[in-house]
Image 1 (tube, helix red, strand yellow):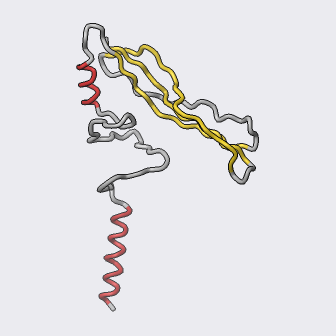
Image 2 (cartoon, helix red, strand yellow):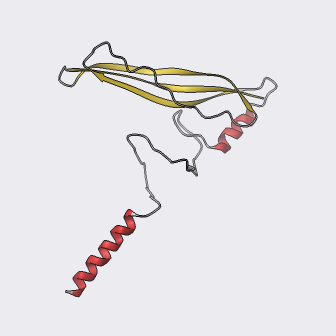
Image 3 (spheres, rainbow, N blue to C red):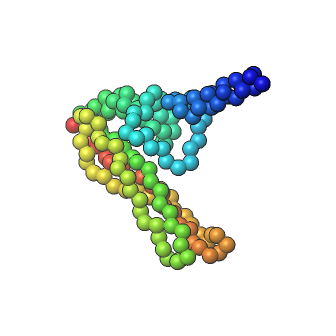
Length: 147
């Protein structure tokens, strides 16, 4: 009987330790639906980007700015993606254009302009023909020029 009780305590302790752990390690791809809130904490060990939607680390951005240090300066566009959606019984209701705050220009760079770009839109009759769904997606952009 004591072996069963000890096993219960060990199992319980392992579960509590897992629930309250401070780190999560994943091998392979991690897919998340929804947003990730880092609560103003750093995101570390970001590799160099491969696809247009990949995150950029400071070393990559610094190297990029150094390579664009010609006499004509150089420009970079920093983007923040957004998505808006409207589900309504009113066919003419639109979700509106979204926005977010793109990253600040790096040191040694100055902002030229900022703008929103719409990269996709769609919609149609949904939910058993009782509602209309519409969405826009795009980026808020900041254009920076090398000082």
